[in-house]
Image 1 (cartoon, rainbow, N blue to C red):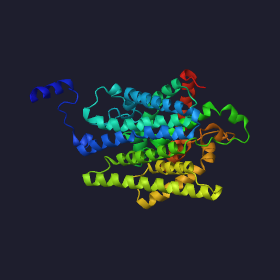
Image 2 (image 1 turned 180 degrees about the vertical axis):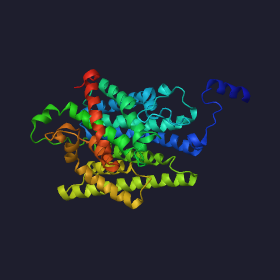
Image 3 (image 1 turned 45 degrees about the vertical axis):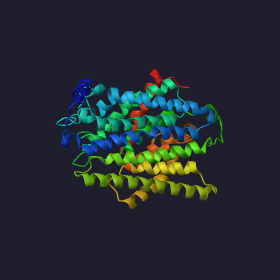
Image 4 (image 1 turned 60 degrees about the vertical axis):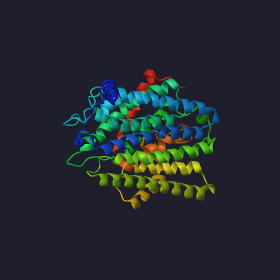
Length: 396
């Protein structure tokens, strides 16, 4: 009976039956388990993002926000399955790795993928869907559902994979660099947060300000309609960031003890950086307005978490406190920074962005922590966004 059952399982799932993974190529079993667990837990960000966004906008936009977050997750997953993973990591686990320095050329629709590679796919899928969610959240309730699905698919199928390949594959031109000096992004401060943040910012610029904002000379951002929703969303995102940065420590050490130590260091640095950013923002805001603000503190917290993604496994804990504090200060300066790097000088940023300013602390702190080499991505993303809007987006 047991033999019959085992044969039935093997026949039903020939793709994974009898799989033996090469440790040197696909990592140890512990590393693959960490990929699976961390990747699954990172998906909790898709609970935190809609709660943060729903709490930040007006109550009448909540249902729209929630529906668009479902749409973003679904279509970005499909985009990564169709071509995103292939362009980003296709062929990376072959004997010679991905030979192309610009994009991958194998494993479209996961065809011909090795079963041992699936844990890595799960982990990378969680990163890819986060990029689309950052962009979607930056535009809030303004695009239609159709437009949300289209750009979520496109950014994960074509835009994000290019940057991921450049930075995270063995032959990517940013990773290899020149004269032995390459670019390192530990957990996606540039690859994930800058790409998502810049895409969202360019979307805001393309859409332009709402008419009532454009005509108002004394416009003030809409206050959060639900502080509990906003607070819970921030807390869920904070916990998810621990897995986001901690999971990226896999394959950074040759021993199990070293691996676990790296994961611990990445998580500790992430917590300290976010805490430092929160403390700096609430103290400065209290000094300026004599009020405590959970919304401002939350943005400072998330700024620290984003900035730490670049080097969570490489710096000492005391340095993470400094990085988080500087990230919070950088967030306060993002209106000027954004005007300088991304928009005409006449742009009034506050009229273009939704209340939670999601794109600002993602793109500015991601770029701050990885260096300015990612700013060139904004031009590429801007052109793609403009022309994709003209061709297939139905926007308000």
